[in-house]
Length: 109
Image (cartoon, rainbow, N blue to C red; front, side):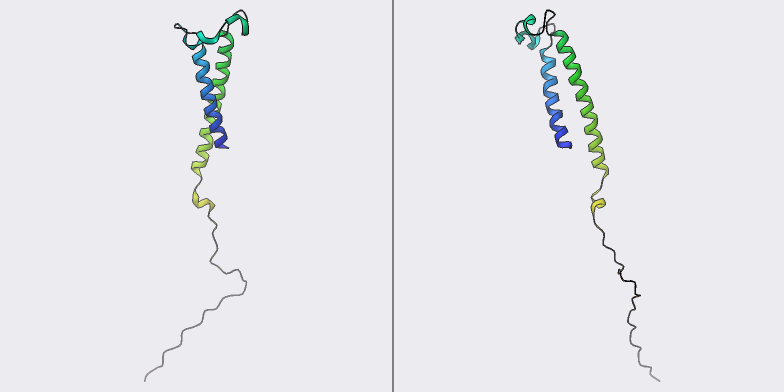
C-alpha cells in the first residue's frame, strides 16, 4: 500500500512541477512554449485552467503526503517482537507432572 502511494506521490510531484512551470509569470517561464492561447483553452487562455489544475493537483499532493505520513507512522509503531510466536513452556497435559526425588544419602553412624 505504501509503495503504491509513494509512486503516486512521485507522479503528483512531477505533474505539480510541470503545472507550476507552465503558468504565466513575469518572464513568461515555460508558458511561452504552450502555443496559441485561444486555440485549446478558449479566449481567456490557459491561465484559469492551469490555476484550477494546479490547485487540484496540490490538494491531492497534500492528501497523499498526510496519508503516507500516517501509514509510515503506523508501521513504525509496530515491533518485530509483536510478530514473534511464543511457545509456552508449560506442558499441555492435564495430569500433574511429578519429578523424581533424589536418592537419599546413606546414613553413617
